[in-house]
Image (cartoon, rainbow, N blue to C red; front, side):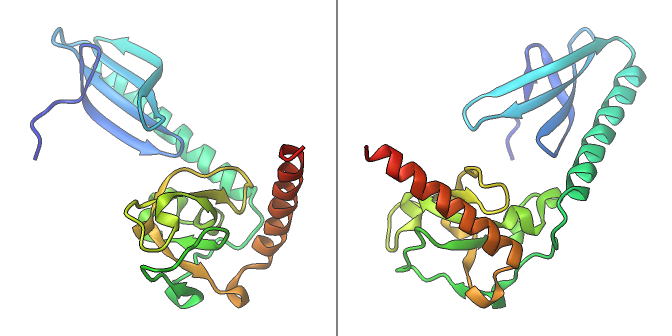
Length: 196
Protein backbone atom coordinates (compact mmCIF):
# COMPACT_ATOMS: atom_id res chain seq x y z
CA UNK A 1 0.00 0.00 0.00
CA UNK A 2 1.30 3.43 -0.91
CA UNK A 3 2.07 5.94 1.84
CA UNK A 4 1.96 8.80 -0.65
CA UNK A 5 -0.60 11.41 0.32
CA UNK A 6 -2.85 12.91 -2.32
CA UNK A 7 -2.36 16.66 -2.33
CA UNK A 8 -4.19 19.58 -3.95
CA UNK A 9 -1.91 22.58 -3.59
CA UNK A 10 -1.13 22.54 0.15
CA UNK A 11 -4.29 20.60 1.09
CA UNK A 12 -4.04 16.91 1.95
CA UNK A 13 -7.10 15.07 0.64
CA UNK A 14 -8.96 13.47 3.56
CA UNK A 15 -12.30 12.61 1.89
CA UNK A 16 -13.20 12.03 -1.72
CA UNK A 17 -15.98 10.31 -3.60
CA UNK A 18 -16.37 9.96 -7.35
CA UNK A 19 -20.02 9.89 -8.31
CA UNK A 20 -21.19 10.79 -11.76
CA UNK A 21 -18.95 12.92 -13.90
CA UNK A 22 -17.10 14.59 -11.03
CA UNK A 23 -15.31 13.68 -7.85
CA UNK A 24 -16.11 15.67 -4.71
CA UNK A 25 -13.00 16.23 -2.57
CA UNK A 26 -12.26 17.57 0.93
CA UNK A 27 -8.76 18.52 2.02
CA UNK A 28 -7.02 19.97 5.05
CA UNK A 29 -4.01 22.31 5.08
CA UNK A 30 -1.19 22.29 7.64
CA UNK A 31 -2.82 25.43 9.10
CA UNK A 32 -6.04 23.43 9.74
CA UNK A 33 -7.97 25.19 6.97
CA UNK A 34 -10.44 22.93 5.15
CA UNK A 35 -11.31 22.95 1.47
CA UNK A 36 -13.99 21.33 -0.70
CA UNK A 37 -13.84 21.23 -4.49
CA UNK A 38 -14.85 19.24 -7.55
CA UNK A 39 -12.22 17.24 -9.40
CA UNK A 40 -12.40 16.02 -12.99
CA UNK A 41 -9.77 13.99 -14.82
CA UNK A 42 -8.98 13.59 -18.49
CA UNK A 43 -6.58 10.68 -18.15
CA UNK A 44 -3.51 12.92 -18.02
CA UNK A 45 -4.38 15.70 -15.59
CA UNK A 46 -6.72 16.58 -12.76
CA UNK A 47 -8.74 19.80 -12.82
CA UNK A 48 -10.20 21.41 -9.72
CA UNK A 49 -13.20 23.71 -9.78
CA UNK A 50 -15.55 25.49 -7.39
CA UNK A 51 -13.11 25.31 -4.48
CA UNK A 52 -14.32 26.70 -1.17
CA UNK A 53 -12.15 27.03 1.94
CA UNK A 54 -12.97 27.62 5.59
CA UNK A 55 -11.49 27.02 9.01
CA UNK A 56 -14.86 25.48 10.01
CA UNK A 57 -14.73 21.73 9.37
CA UNK A 58 -18.50 21.27 9.73
CA UNK A 59 -19.19 24.02 7.20
CA UNK A 60 -16.97 22.25 4.66
CA UNK A 61 -18.53 18.86 5.46
CA UNK A 62 -21.99 20.33 4.91
CA UNK A 63 -20.82 21.64 1.53
CA UNK A 64 -19.32 18.22 0.75
CA UNK A 65 -22.58 16.40 1.49
CA UNK A 66 -24.62 18.99 -0.43
CA UNK A 67 -22.39 18.52 -3.46
CA UNK A 68 -22.66 14.74 -3.20
CA UNK A 69 -26.45 15.06 -3.02
CA UNK A 70 -26.32 17.30 -6.09
CA UNK A 71 -24.34 14.70 -8.01
CA UNK A 72 -26.82 11.98 -7.00
CA UNK A 73 -29.78 14.17 -8.03
CA UNK A 74 -28.16 14.86 -11.42
CA UNK A 75 -27.66 11.13 -11.99
CA UNK A 76 -31.25 10.36 -11.01
CA UNK A 77 -32.53 13.07 -13.36
CA UNK A 78 -30.36 11.69 -16.16
CA UNK A 79 -31.61 8.15 -15.56
CA UNK A 80 -35.25 9.34 -15.54
CA UNK A 81 -34.85 10.80 -19.05
CA UNK A 82 -33.55 7.59 -20.65
CA UNK A 83 -36.88 5.86 -21.44
CA UNK A 84 -35.20 2.55 -22.28
CA UNK A 85 -34.90 -0.70 -20.33
CA UNK A 86 -31.86 -0.37 -18.08
CA UNK A 87 -31.20 -4.12 -17.71
CA UNK A 88 -27.59 -5.10 -18.31
CA UNK A 89 -26.68 -7.84 -20.74
CA UNK A 90 -25.01 -10.96 -19.36
CA UNK A 91 -22.55 -13.50 -20.76
CA UNK A 92 -25.34 -15.71 -22.17
CA UNK A 93 -26.41 -12.80 -24.38
CA UNK A 94 -22.92 -12.38 -25.85
CA UNK A 95 -20.56 -14.47 -27.93
CA UNK A 96 -17.56 -15.32 -25.74
CA UNK A 97 -14.48 -13.27 -26.56
CA UNK A 98 -11.55 -15.40 -27.73
CA UNK A 99 -7.94 -14.23 -28.10
CA UNK A 100 -8.14 -14.40 -31.90
CA UNK A 101 -11.41 -12.45 -32.26
CA UNK A 102 -11.31 -9.10 -34.05
CA UNK A 103 -14.09 -7.01 -32.54
CA UNK A 104 -13.60 -3.91 -34.71
CA UNK A 105 -16.99 -2.85 -36.07
CA UNK A 106 -18.85 -5.08 -33.60
CA UNK A 107 -21.20 -4.10 -30.79
CA UNK A 108 -19.81 -5.39 -27.51
CA UNK A 109 -21.08 -5.36 -23.96
CA UNK A 110 -18.78 -4.04 -21.26
CA UNK A 111 -18.60 -6.25 -18.17
CA UNK A 112 -20.81 -4.83 -15.41
CA UNK A 113 -17.86 -5.10 -13.00
CA UNK A 114 -15.91 -2.70 -15.25
CA UNK A 115 -18.60 -0.02 -14.99
CA UNK A 116 -18.81 2.27 -11.99
CA UNK A 117 -21.84 1.46 -9.84
CA UNK A 118 -23.87 4.47 -10.93
CA UNK A 119 -23.32 3.55 -14.59
CA UNK A 120 -24.28 -0.12 -14.41
CA UNK A 121 -27.08 0.41 -16.90
CA UNK A 122 -27.73 -0.67 -20.48
CA UNK A 123 -27.12 2.81 -21.91
CA UNK A 124 -23.53 2.70 -20.62
CA UNK A 125 -22.78 -0.95 -21.43
CA UNK A 126 -23.04 -1.20 -25.23
CA UNK A 127 -20.10 0.00 -27.34
CA UNK A 128 -19.57 -0.06 -31.12
CA UNK A 129 -15.86 -0.84 -31.32
CA UNK A 130 -14.01 1.44 -33.77
CA UNK A 131 -10.32 0.81 -33.11
CA UNK A 132 -7.58 0.11 -30.61
CA UNK A 133 -4.84 -2.47 -30.50
CA UNK A 134 -6.96 -4.58 -28.13
CA UNK A 135 -9.77 -4.70 -30.69
CA UNK A 136 -7.68 -6.97 -32.93
CA UNK A 137 -7.10 -10.63 -32.25
CA UNK A 138 -3.74 -11.80 -30.91
CA UNK A 139 -2.65 -8.21 -30.35
CA UNK A 140 0.04 -7.13 -27.92
CA UNK A 141 -1.99 -4.11 -26.93
CA UNK A 142 -5.17 -4.11 -24.88
CA UNK A 143 -6.85 -0.74 -25.57
CA UNK A 144 -10.31 -0.75 -27.11
CA UNK A 145 -12.01 2.44 -28.33
CA UNK A 146 -15.53 2.87 -29.59
CA UNK A 147 -18.79 4.74 -29.75
CA UNK A 148 -21.40 4.49 -27.02
CA UNK A 149 -24.43 3.00 -28.79
CA UNK A 150 -26.92 5.00 -26.72
CA UNK A 151 -25.35 8.45 -27.04
CA UNK A 152 -23.66 8.04 -30.42
CA UNK A 153 -20.59 9.78 -28.99
CA UNK A 154 -17.06 8.50 -28.69
CA UNK A 155 -16.71 6.54 -25.49
CA UNK A 156 -13.58 6.42 -23.38
CA UNK A 157 -10.80 3.87 -23.44
CA UNK A 158 -11.56 0.32 -22.40
CA UNK A 159 -9.26 -2.64 -21.93
CA UNK A 160 -9.95 -5.85 -23.84
CA UNK A 161 -10.44 -7.58 -20.48
CA UNK A 162 -13.35 -5.15 -19.79
CA UNK A 163 -15.30 -6.63 -22.72
CA UNK A 164 -17.88 -9.29 -21.88
CA UNK A 165 -18.24 -10.27 -25.54
CA UNK A 166 -19.91 -9.42 -28.83
CA UNK A 167 -23.65 -8.98 -28.36
CA UNK A 168 -25.66 -11.77 -30.02
CA UNK A 169 -27.94 -10.24 -32.71
CA UNK A 170 -31.06 -11.83 -31.21
CA UNK A 171 -30.19 -10.32 -27.80
CA UNK A 172 -29.56 -6.78 -29.04
CA UNK A 173 -32.22 -4.49 -27.51
CA UNK A 174 -34.47 -2.78 -30.08
CA UNK A 175 -33.40 0.68 -28.91
CA UNK A 176 -29.76 -0.32 -29.59
CA UNK A 177 -30.60 -1.60 -33.09
CA UNK A 178 -32.32 1.71 -33.87
CA UNK A 179 -29.45 3.82 -32.54
CA UNK A 180 -26.89 1.66 -34.29
CA UNK A 181 -28.54 2.37 -37.66
CA UNK A 182 -28.26 6.11 -36.99
CA UNK A 183 -24.59 5.80 -35.95
CA UNK A 184 -23.70 3.74 -39.02
CA UNK A 185 -25.50 6.20 -41.32
CA UNK A 186 -23.61 9.13 -39.76
CA UNK A 187 -20.29 7.29 -40.04
CA UNK A 188 -20.96 6.50 -43.72
CA UNK A 189 -21.77 10.17 -44.41
CA UNK A 190 -18.61 11.29 -42.60
CA UNK A 191 -16.52 8.77 -44.52
CA UNK A 192 -17.98 10.10 -47.79
CA UNK A 193 -17.13 13.69 -46.82
CA UNK A 194 -13.60 12.70 -45.79
CA UNK A 195 -12.94 10.94 -49.11
CA UNK A 196 -13.63 14.08 -51.18
